[in-house]
Image (tube, rainbow, N blue to C red):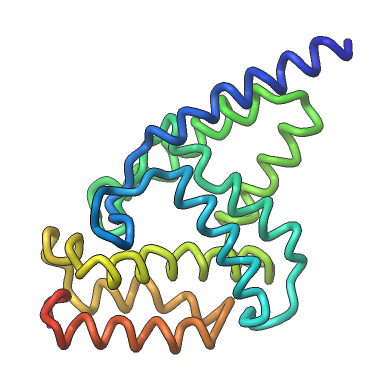
Length: 196
């Protein structure tokens, strides 16, 4: 029984290595290449540690860290869906649900339930931890895009109303981070990186 549990855990860990191969739209801040989803999750964990004091309410940091580390594992099967791609977002929830069934199902039952629960909580964006994690998930690509010269906004012809709509939910979990994000957006509009 113990051996079976360990084998399942190892198989899960081997499988999630594939997250390193899921390429996102966001560039690294130096603009040298696109980041992958594993790098994004790692970066979010550090954002959570550094910026926890800016959460609207105190949060359980350990839970936030777990949440941001598992939130994109479903992309192994579902792929990364560009937040401004309306067509691809239509069936995103369905694709990610199937992926969650398979990927978290690799783990022993108790861990499968815990990881799935963390993912579902993140997706629901209702608890203080999920709201804060979701705010970070919006802030990180915004900062990346700003620091890399707004390349992906320009490539996709992104408009200011799209960026404000996508990122305004930050205010629910981290109002100060949303205020900061608005300065980034306004600067990007002024530079012509985001269409007015």
